[in-house]
Length: 125
Image (cartoon, rainbow, N blue to C red; front, top):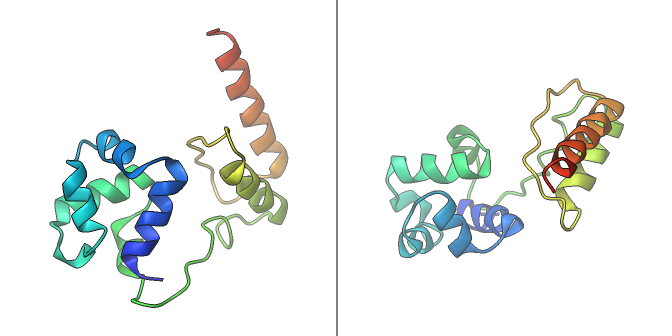
């Protein structure tokens, strides 16, 4: 997988390319250009994209021209159940959320966090 295809895939997981460009305050045409050639982009724009996706520029730099990128949950969480639940949350339609966790979090702690977020959201209806 190339850097460009990796970024495109991650952006599309969040919505449309246009929505993402607006979210990170970048012209849509600039983002489209970068998705064709990341190597030609300014470091400031690459950092802006990475920050919007919640990944580091160092991680992006490690991606070779033709390698497969594992799911971010694989290998990050020390608890296999937590990794599985994080993947469920990441791919669940309508439940895409920013979810940052320490790698030693348990599935139960993750579920408790989700319940708390849902409780907070219910107070604002």
